[in-house]
Each structure stands twice: as C-alpha cells, then as structure tokens.
Amino acid sequence: MSSSEQPLRRVLVTGGAGYIGSHVIYALQETRRYKVISVDNHHNSTPKSLVRVAQLARDNLPADASEHDRDSAEIDAHQCDLTKPDEVRRVFEKYGKGGIWGVVHIAAYKAVGESTEIPLTYYENNVSATVYLLQIMAEFDCTRMVYSSSATVYGTPPVIPIPETTRLQAESPYGKTKVMCETILGDLCAAEPSRWRAISLRYFNPAGAHPSGRIGEDPLGRPGNLLPLLAHMAVGRVKDSTLKVFGNDYPTPDGTCVRDYLHVLDLAKGHLLSLDALEPGSKVFDNCPTEARYKAYNLGKGRGMSVLQIVDAMRKATGFDFKYEIIGRRRGDVPDLTADPALAEKELGFTAPADLETMCRDLWNWQTKNPNGYDGPDATSA
Ligand SMILES: NC(=O)c1ccc[n+]([C@@H]2O[C@H](COP(=O)([O-])OP(=O)(O)OC[C@H]3O[C@@H](n4cnc5c(N)ncnc54)[C@H](O)[C@@H]3O)[C@@H](O)[C@H]2O)c1
Image 1 (cartoon, rainbow, N blue to C red):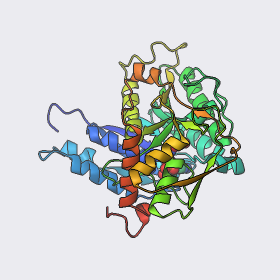
Image 2 (image 1 turned 30 degrees about the vertical axis):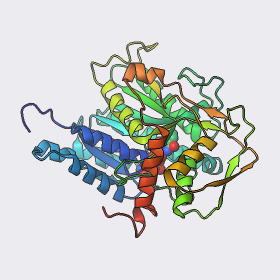
Image 3 (image 1 turned 135 degrees about the vertical axis):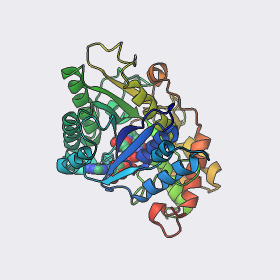
Image 4 (image 1 turned 60 degrees about the horizontal axis):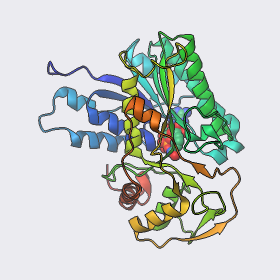
C-alpha cells in the first residue's frame, strides 16, 4: 500500500449475488476504497454473478495497480443464510470486533404476490433475519447500515411525486416487512444515538444492467416485473405472443400504470453516497428531529413512465414487435408511483441521469448475451 492509500474499508453486502447486490458490489469495487464481503444463500441467485463482478473489477484496474487495488477487486464471498444466526456470526468472527466497517443489507424476498401466500416465510426472511443481523452487528461493534427499502412502503400514496414524509402504509406482507425493518432501524438508532447510524433507501423501479452485459437481472421462472418480462419475450424465453396490460383506465396520461424507472447503476451509486453519509463528519443527520441518526431517502428519477411508454422503448431497443392487449385492472396495482427524489439529491448528492433508452439498451445487451441468464449453456463465460 502506498502512503497515499487508506486501508480498504470492509463492507459486508447481504444479497450480494442478486440483481441489485451485484451492481452495488460493482460500484463499491470501482472506487477501490472498499473490501467487499458478500453474504448470500443463493435462494434467488447464483455465485456466478460474483465471479463476473470480480472479473469486471479486475478488468477495471489500471496497469500499475497496487496490491491494495488488486485486493479491492477480490470479493470475500460467503454462502450463508441470514435466517441462521450461527452462520452469520461465523462471518463476523472471521474479522473480529470492529473488523467490518458497515453493512449494506440488500438480501430479502421480494415478490409481492408470493408474500400474500406465504407471509410467515416473508416475515422470517426479511424481518427476523434483519433483527439477527443487527444483533450480531452490535456484538461485533459494527453499527452502520444502509438498508434496501422500497417504494412499496407508501402503498397507494396520496401525493405524486411522493416525498419521504408520506405516511407509510404498505399493503402487502412484502411491503410491510420493509416498513417493519425501517421502523426497527429507526428505533435502534433512537435507543443508542451515539452508537448507531442507518439509512434506508426506498428504491423505485431499478432497471437495466451493467453496459458490459456481464451482469444483469436473472429472475428464476417467469419474470414478475415488466422490463425483464419484455426482454424474455423478445429473446424467446417467454413464449407468450401478447403482453397483457392490466387496465388503461387509470388517471394517468395514457391510462396505463406509471412507474419511476432508474438505471441499476445509478441506484448502486446511491449506496456509495449513503455509506459516505454514515461517516463521522457527515451532516445528513444534523436536521433529524431527534438525536437518532436515522434517515430514509427515495431513490428514483422523479419521472414516471407508463406501461405503454415502456413497451414502446423496448420495441425500439429490441426491434421486437410486441403485441399487447388491455385486460382488466389487477388487484393491488397503484396507478402512479413516481418519486420525489429532491431530498436524496440535496442531502446525499444523488442523481439518476441514465434515461429509459439507456436502461432498455443495457437490459437488451445483457439479455442477448445471456439469453438463459447466468446458468444457460449459451451464457458468455465467466
Ligand atoms: N428489484 C426491484 O425492483 C426492487 C425494488 C424495490 C426494492 N427492492 C429490494 O432490493 C433488494 C434486492 O432486490 P433484487 O431485485 O436484487 O433481488 P434478488 O432476489 O435478485 O436479490 C436478493 C438476494 O438476496 C439473497 N437472499 C434472500 N434471502 C436470503 C437469506 N435469508 N440469506 C442470504 N441471502 C438471501 C438472494 O439469494 C438474492 O441473491 C430486496 O431487498 C428488495 O426487496 C428491489
């Protein structure tokens, strides 16, 4: 390590092998300031994503990379289930008290519909596991967390664009697990204000992939989200000839539902800014109403896109002639979820510059290079 280099800061990323986790790790490694420890049980991912992220980091190293730089490109990956505290404790034991600077807690189950069928599984995996993780962090004097929350915490919001001050009224068990974890973090930061600092990031609709096409979203089974579904249709993995559009009689410009899409790499950069905001000198907690150093921020573009606009953008990106039919509204769909991202911009310096065209282009690049995801026989090699 040269004298100008700070020691690498160890950050543990839960759910590191997943869609968002792999892009967050990419962003962390790109800075060459962090040593990433990943924890994932691969319930919804494969370790191959981590192999590829590390390769991207190695490829990004300058020709004269130091030992310290090279170390930053290697991930310390643990296959570990967060619902099993003994497994998690073993990871922390490896580094000892104070050995891990902070945690980016991304791992969770995330399917709204499924959460209504197996709520206990969701509460265990998303809430109990978070409590165990926080307890173990406390044992090891690791008291900084960036938490993956979601716009679903707002339920059907009364005001669009949605500011963070909106009451939290999640409608599904999944959404409620996010509200509960935010509440737990707020309570913990209030109980020990000189010890804990945490930031919840309420993601809107992450989309796209790293422009190399080496990492991307690889949903198991039929994609639940619109953009990956369109990509799977265009690549021939989903055989439906027609997209079902749920309702065109919403109070939106073209009548279809509106969502706020942001590029997954812009979202990932929001995590770097949040980690910086957990530093001792940070000002972001100065305006907290109490002593508790806890904040929640929306991460979105602040620009809504309708289902039909997305179909059109994907048609341009893929050249595939999507057919769609309008069917009735789907229960639980909210007409418009557009973020007010002003607070994150003002306090964290967050912006999400990538446009929809870029998101669709990067998604399609990933999908064509890996038509069957990480595990398909025709995926590009690690
Ligand atoms: N993708 C979205 O549209 C979106 C939107 C808002 C919020 N979020 C939140 O972002 C986070 C990541 O989402 P994603 O799209 O990357 O999902 P993902 O399923 O691709 O990633 C989640 C990762 O967590 C792992 N995991 C789950 N339970 C675990 C456990 N008990 N122990 C260890 N690892 C476990 C999975 O194997 C997976 O690799 C989730 O918390 C989700 O709720 C996602």
